[in-house]
Image (cartoon, rainbow, N blue to C red; front, side):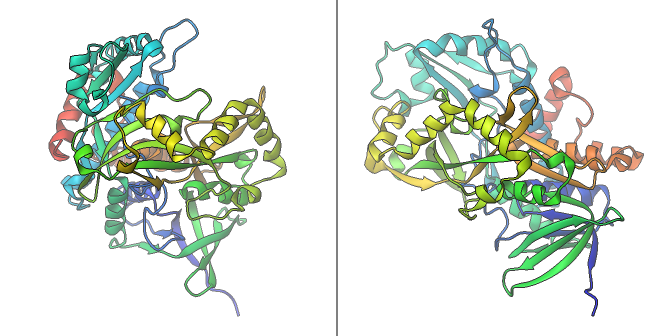
Length: 493
């Protein structure tokens, strides 16, 4: 008896922010496209996209100091910051479009206006001053404020100034345009729309076990239903691996040449969550500091006002740790099973070149509650251990890739890996991730739907969904102001 194979245009693996965004874009661009979505858990956005697992900052490079490195000559490199700021504006445009067209019904609390601040002390003050001057030369950062005097800092962040020496050298920048985003709520709203759309099927508790390309160029995926242990085959013209830490193992199983040599270094995270309502009420900002030497960018310390399920929360962290899991609800064998002949050397080389990171992670794992409190006191001098509870955050898998000179390097961003024929794409990496999801998915469209992207129909529709599409916001102050006015109105910022 022959197995009946279901055939669709597109398969999305993983029900996170990336798959949701790509699914929404594709159905708007081509309504008759058939899409199947497979998620191994029983709910959407349960891993990296969940509010408690994701930083939720609305990364726009206003406050993240690691996006503006200092060059050897002492000047500040703003290229990455400008690119991320542009990307976040594009995300807001698409969210505004979906809300105006009543495609999604998100709670108003999914995005809130929360000031973004950078705070430094002592030797880092000069760096922050130069960063402020460099960034404010670009209109994307118009409105950023800088202060060194204690009284202003006390007005901006009273909780952080309480108990601090007024004569201490310190400085901060403030951007009132900053936001907090609940990506879990946003993702689930997008899937709520997609699953009611003709041609879309959403399958929870389904895990993609293998995938192989046939002679016709289609991908055949073996998918297991974890509720009844049954397995079936699905064929698709295009496959997107947006399964967070689970994307790398599937990319390796696909055996596409472009995926060879990639490895992953898993890093776990923890937060200190404030449980004292009186303390939470004293802080209303996302305040980022400098990362410890040798630590990964995802470990940049920050005191973070969040809104989760409509309730104001206050988090500090994240504290990093080592794990062999690629997903929070993954397997301890994930790292071992990801090893291949082609990626062992790059992974070893990356480890050798990042010994300070290894030492940092060991120190983090060995931390006691008192050690974590001391780190918090750098931000909140009056912090008390009983006011804070340790919470486990999500997993991050930092990308390791081959490098001709170094052998292997650790990448601290997001990377789209795609097949030469455009039939498969995988998203690897972590920050800034969710905040730039729309720009990343447009990259996927440009690589994997080249012919369609050149048609007048798709170009016109993209312009409707993203008014600034095709025009760099970083070099057009007038367009940037118009876009921000539009998104602020629709998103009620």
